[in-house]
Length: 367
Image 1 (cartoon, rainbow, N blue to C red):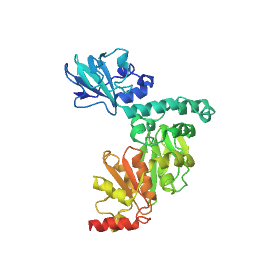
Image 2 (tube, rainbow, N blue to C red):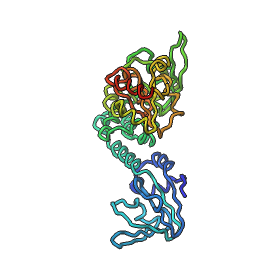
Image 3 (tube, rainbow, N blue to C red):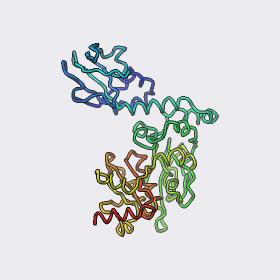
C-alpha cells in the first residue's frame, strides 16, 4: 500500500537529499510515497525501482543477488541512508523479513534538485559582484519565489533549461524593489523585461472601450511580461503594484537566450498530426472569427487573451499543439502553458507559413 505522508525529519536522514534545505525537503516530502509491505512479501514484485530512488526506512529486508550473494538491510542503519541500487547493483529478488516501510521518490526530480542546489550554492563572479542583498537572494535559489518550486523545476518554466544555463540564469536576474502604486509595465509599451514576483502583489489591467478593466491579480511566485517578449509584440496590459514588493527581472536578450528557445518546442504539421492521432489536442489561439473561418477540424479555440483562464481546465497529461496565423500568438500561448507544466507544442510556421500546404491537407483528410 502506498501513501504520501512523509515527514521532513525522515528525509533529513537520507543521502544525498539530506544536503537540501528544509524548504526544499518540505516540498519533496509532499511528492514522496510511503510503501508499506507485509512480512515475507517481495516489495518489488509488482513495482520495481526503475526511475525511482527507493529507501528502506523501517524493518528488515533480505536482498539476493545473481552471484548468490545476499545481505540483510535494516531500516535506520547507516547503509539504509542510501537508496537501493545506488551503486548500480541489481538484486535478483527481495523479501521482507519483517513488516517494512519504503520511501519512493522520482530519481530525476532528486537529480534536478541537487543540480540546482549545487550550482546555485556556488555563485558566479557576476553574482558575487552584486550588492549583498541581491547576492544572497540570487545565489540561494531555495529562498527565491515560487517560480523556483520543485514542481516548476521538473515540469514548469525551468524544466527545459539546459544545466549549463542555470548559473547564467541566476546570475542575470536582477532583484529590484518596487513600491505600492508603481507601474511596472504599461500597455502599448515595448517589451523589455520578464518579471517574477519574489514578494508583493500586482494587478493586471487592460484598456477596453476607454475603460480600464481588471484582468487578474498576481502574487509571489507568479511571472509576467513574457507574452510581449515571446510574440515580439507590444505590451497588451498594464501591471501595477498593489503593495510594496520585490521583483526578479530578466532582460529581453537574456530571456530569449536562456528561457524562450528552450521552452518552445516546434513541430511540423506531420508531427502535429501524429500527436493528435495519439490523443493530443489542437488549440487554435486566434480570435473566434478566425477560428470559425478556417480552424483545423477537432481544434478547440482558446484565444491568447484567454489562455491563462484555461490553466485549471487543461490536462497536464495530454499533449497540446497550438497554432495561429504566423506563429507569434501561438508561441506566446505555448510558452505560457509550458512554464506551468503543460505539454505544449508549437505548430511551426503557423497557418500561413511554409506549412500551409500540409495544413490544408490536414483539413482535406478530415473533410
